[in-house]
Length: 239
Image 1: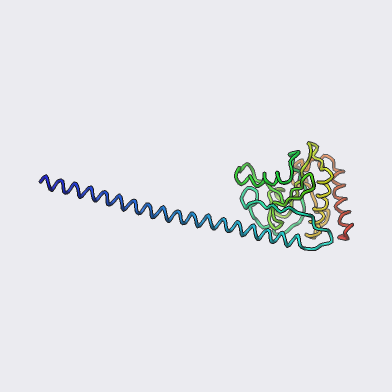
Image 2: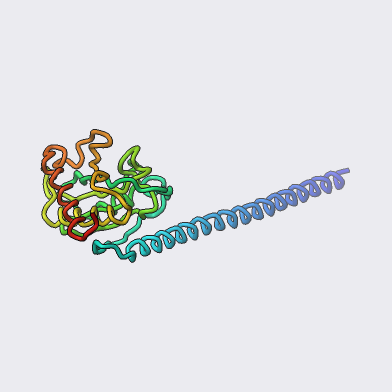
């Protein structure tokens, strides 16, 4: 009887060990399968983002290579990573206007503002971006393809291109290099998208926000900017 009891106990112990090993095998197989699925998904999204970025760069290259009457401005194309906080990759089906903004952070350059937009994919502080940022040295950095919306102009995101302009101080006034680049870029966009000067607006005209500050507080300066854009168009025989 004692031997049978020991045998049964050993059998039960072996059976339990066998069950544990079987469970461990299943767990390992499941973990391996899950790892393969996760790896495949990550690879898929990385390849898709790379494809989207490549396609967007090709589209922008095509736009830049189109010869119009106005000389192409030099663009530093530094497209944002596709993400829900600054570049949602939503198609901009029609361009009906150009919106002028200011950065509201004196002393920062175009690339720094571009990098702020890029960082929103990690910080999730807000949703914001712009198609172009013009630095205080006149450098133009492109953040979003002209075929996609940017988070810049509220309800007009769906049909406008946005230009952020860097500023030197709290007055919000553009220095000469920024101003000239803004006039050139705006006129070039007006020509390429078949717009008119009346289609160039301030962020203020969409929401009432004090942006761009100097052009809101000094309406005559805004009228002069529009006149300078119009003069640029006339200079090259666009209108």
